[in-house]
Each structure stands twice: as C-alpha cells, then as structure tokens.
Length: 155
Image 1 (cartoon, rainbow, N blue to C red):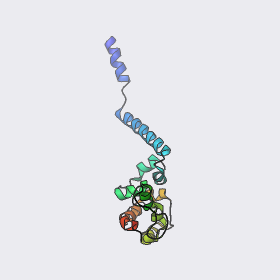
Image 2: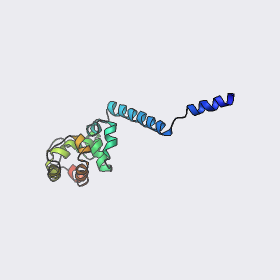
Image 3: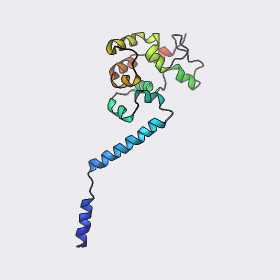
Image 4: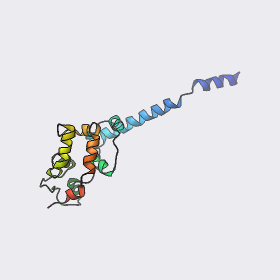
C-alpha cells in the first residue's frame, strides 16, 4: 500500500514541460527587462526598444551596421572621440557633433536617405521606437546604403 501512495504522489506533481518552459521564459524576460531598465550602457538601445517584449516582437534582422546604430556603438565621430581615437567629433558636413542621431535625422550628407524615409514614412523625423518597429525595412535600407567610413572623414 505504501508504494501506491508514492506513485500517486508523483503523478499528482507532474508539471507539463510547456508550463516549465513558459515560466522560465517569463523569468528570463523579467531579468532582461530589469537589466535594460537599470543599465547605464543601454541608453541608446532603450530609445529603440523601451521593453524587452518590444524587442522580441520587432523581428528586426540584425547585421553589424544595424547593431551599431541600435546600440549607439561605432560608426560616428562622437563614439570614436569618446575612446580618444580621434580629437574632434566634427562631422564632414561641419556639425560639431557627429552622433548617430545627427546622421540619422539631420546630416545634409545623408539627405538622399532622409528623402527616402520621407517618401515611405511621410512625417520626418519619427521616433526611434517607430523606426525599429513600424519602419524597420526603411531603417535597414538607410543604414545598409550608408557608407559610414566615408562620412567619418572630415575636411
């Protein structure tokens, strides 16, 4: 009789694998969200993806250029100056601060890309969150057709 009680107890406590996976995924998402929210290093990424769920749903295809834009790492003179690789963060257009925001939204050197954005999107500029969710194809095309090495050159 004792053996039957043990067998019944084991059957009673069986949990479906799907529930375990779902709970583990939720726990991981909560941990990632805490890290995203509290990290000082994720400020640029938070502008594109305010929540981990937003990033998970975006289905944006990453490559090195897109990752650099979304994280704010590399390809700008502001970034290179931060690590003392260049003396001035001046853009080749003359702006004193060649940041990713300057390149994506304001730089006259990228006016052709800005016009493509306006044709496809309408109102320009739009929020970074909208770029990463609603207009990811246009963002990807803009970034992939931009020669960031050429833009970093100052006169």
